[in-house]
Structures are given as structure tokens and as C-alpha cells.
Amino acid sequence: MNKQSNTYTILYSAIMVVVVGAVLALTYMALKPKQEENIANDKRMQILSAVHLTAEDGDYKAVYDKYVTETFVVNKNGEKVDGDAFSINLANELKMQEAEIKLPVFVCTLDNGEVKYILPVYGAGLWGPIWGYVAVNNDGTTIYGAYFSHQGETPGLGAEIAKPEFQAQFEGKELYKDGEFRAIDVMKAGQKPADNTDYVNAISGGTVTSKGVEAMLKKCLTYYSAYLDQLRKENTTNQ
Amino acid sequence: MLSKKNKEVFFNPFSKNNPVIVQVLGICSVLAVTAKLEPAIVMGISVTAVLAFANVIISLIRNTIPTNIRIIVQLVVVAALVIIVDQVLKAYNYEVSKALSVFIGLIITNCILMGRLEAFALSNGPWDSFLDGVGNGIGYALILIIVGFFRELLGSGTLLGFQVIPQALYDLGYQNNGLMILPPMALITVACIIWVHRSRNKDLQEN
Image (cartoon, rainbow over all chains, first blue to last red; front, side):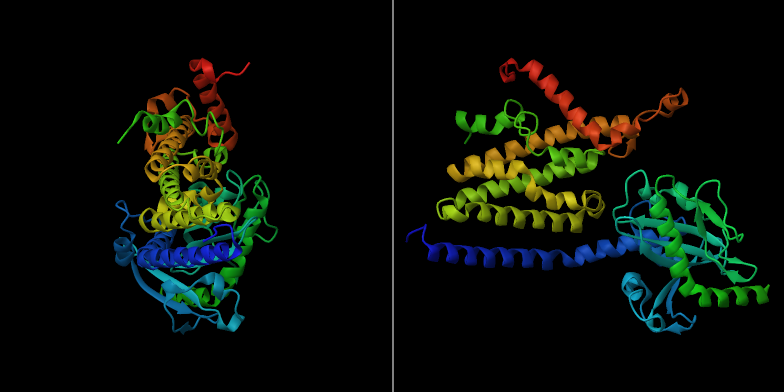
């Protein structure tokens, strides 16, 4: 057969594509369960980071199962709705109608018996998405810990939001001021919010990403505010 | 098994015909993944695996490939192998796969691959091509590891994540060199390696 003819070339490429496609599909299917396990573990690691827990041996599933005692889903009005908190992708939820947004809550009981509520947040940085988990005390206002990550912020500038130094600033900050929901402001060093909201210092040179964190917290935690309100009332009447 | 020619094919890329410091191919990934030693090693292994298999596959089918679509055939083979490597890393070494992110995908565009496929695999048998692929892959990995070694040691004071520079030295006022983490220092480190290599191999010097 003439190897330079058009028929040969077309047949050759058609067969090549089918063979390569089949090989890739097989690889994908064979490795998929393992990959999903890794992605789930990575998510557990991020959730646990918000309450300063890690797994020394990398077995995040065991640590997660031990400390995360309850997960549930709430809607914008703070009512519990059906759904599996762990499998919810907040990025997709935020695109929906406000009333339909499902908000996952991870309840974590620490060794000393304290209960923390871990809430996922998702927003936009300078180059791509940023996300994180915020752990709130059972008074519904004080932040116990925060974890942020990003897809591709500038190293040394915006990417610093993933560093413990930035995240540690959020500890002890309050989402409510005088009974009103205010979230947390991210201000340039030396500046203060005019309305006395709790604030943290932005990253010098990473203004857009810092403002992205502020907007992300405001937007996502506002959705949770009805639920946080409930928490706040429950635990102040009890005391 | 290893004739004189085969030995040359295998060992030349280590030094005299190194893909990075003599042919100056694949520099882009050397800049990108060498801030830490571990991703550098994984990248070296990944490129070696892709290059060896791509060389063998292309060499096996070299007599059937229609000349006018040979570059496309090479690309398809390389792309398929790269996706397999990427999937395997995602399944068995998720942390490193996150650190390397897009660079695994960019192995496809690594000039060493197309260079070796065009220059060697298309005109040699599978065993020779395999040796050529492994040799060039290791030659590339060697440079990556040397650069990664110095950048992690001087930039973070660690090797493979373990603290190497003792705390006592920091107490005396020693500081990690933040510049080593940034891409330009990879280029400068590579340049230093080329300098040392050329001054030791006089026959590589042009007038």
C-alpha cells in the first residue's frame, strides 16, 4: 500500500485516535477511585486545617472521622435541609438562585470538648478562584481559625493568603458587632474600618487578592448569617 | 546488549551531549519546577519515563508513519503518555501532582521530547531508542536535581523538606536567600553549571 496516499494517511490517523482514546479511557477508569480518594482526603485536610488539626501520618480520614462529629446542610434562612455536606461543591451552589443555595456545615468537637462550626467559603482572587474554611466558636461570632487556599495567585504576593501568618490574624475576630452581622474587613496596614468592624491586615502588594478574601468572607458568611444568628441566640440564652 | 555505539547513545547525554546544558533544550521546566528538590526529582522521573516510552513507540511504528503527518503522530503519542503520567501521579502522589500542576501537562511541549523523537527514534531501532530516551531523560533529570538541590538548600535551608541547615547557624545571623526561590536564580544556577561544564570540557568551547 502506498504510504503517502491520502487514504492511508486518513486510515492511519483514524486508527491511531481510536487506539489512543481507548488506552486513555482505560487508564482513567482504572485510576479514578484512587484519585477521588485523594481529592476527598485533600478536602478533609483543608477542613481540619481550619481548626488547627493535622494528620502526622497523612491519614486524614481517621482524624476527620474522629473530630468531625456531625455534618449537615442549611439554607439561607438557617433551616436544615437535605443533602450530604461533604459532597457539596460551594462554587456550584453560589451560581444558583439564593433560595436554593445549599450551605454545608461541618461540626467539629475538639479534644477539650469545645464545639466548632466549620464553614466553607469561595470567591475570586486576582488570577483565579480562592477558597477556604472558617471555623466559628459556638457563640456564632468568634472565629476560631481560618484556612485559605488559591489556584494561582502570585507567589510572594497574593499567594501569601495560604500562609499561616495571614490566617492566624483571623483568630479571635468577631463576625458580629453590636448584634449586627459585619463579617471581617481586610485593611491595608495602618488603616482601620470606619465603622469599627473587626479587621485583619492585608498583604502588601497583594491588594486584589486581599480584597478578594474580604469580599469572599462577606458574601459567603452573609449566606450563613441566619444560621449563625440562631447559634448565637441559642448559646447566649443557655449561659 | 550494550555495544560500543549503544553505550555512547546511553552515556553521551549525561555530559558531552547533555540535553539541558549542551543542547539547551527544556530550559523552561528547569526554571519552573526546581524551587524544591522533590518536584524536581519527580519531574525528572516523569520526563525520563515519557521520553523512553515515546521513543520506543515511535521507533516501533516508524516504518508505518505517513511522513506528512509524522509530527502529529509524535504529538499524539507524547500527549497520551503525558496524560497517563499525570493520572498516575494524581492517584499515587497527589501532593507532588498539586505542586507540579500544569508542568506535567507541559512535558508535551518539552523540546527534548520532539527533539529526540525527530532526531533519533524515527531512524533507529526500539532498543537503541529506548537507551537514547532513558539517557537523555537522566541527563535532564541530573541537571534538574543539581539545580533543585542548590535552590532548596540555599533558598529554604531544607532538602526534600528536612531541615539541613542547623538552627545554630540561624542564631548566628544566617538567613535563607529568598532570591533562590525565584525563577531567575534557576537560570543563573544553570548558567553556572554550563560554565563549570565547559571549562572542564575544552572541546565544547567555540572560538
